[in-house]
Length: 121
Image 1: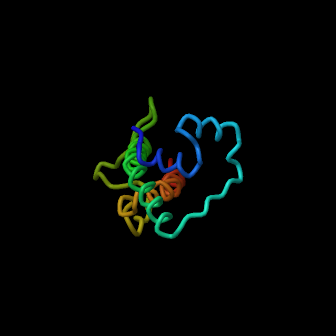
Image 2 (image 1 turned 60 degrees about the vertical axis):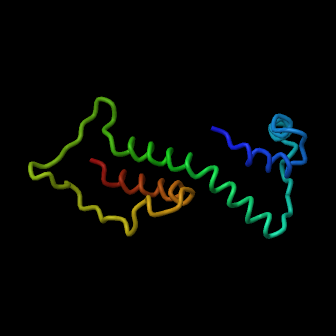
Image 3 (image 1 turned 180 degrees about the vertical axis):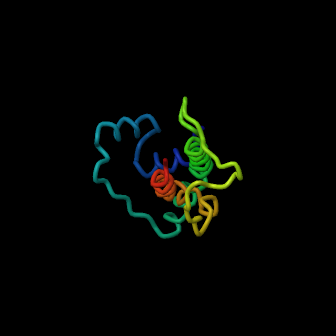
């Protein structure tokens, strides 16, 4: 899914005639080291646009990654005690991953995976 508003904002910032031209310039390395100065209101608007257009994608990908982390590997198995209790004494996180905004969820997810790997049997 693409966001037309975000594409248009980036085309304008990149001083390009259209999206394809901007992508071509970026792939050729012509935008390396380019800085853009924005007024505070414009910068906040762009930040909000990026957050709202990437949020659903990041939330979906975080959920997919969490699901695969919570599933046994192909041909693998999960071990649980007869009482249904955990075999490891792993502290619960101070906040749920889903309490964070989408971009922070994605940044916090590798730590969650690392913690789970530390207790893998």
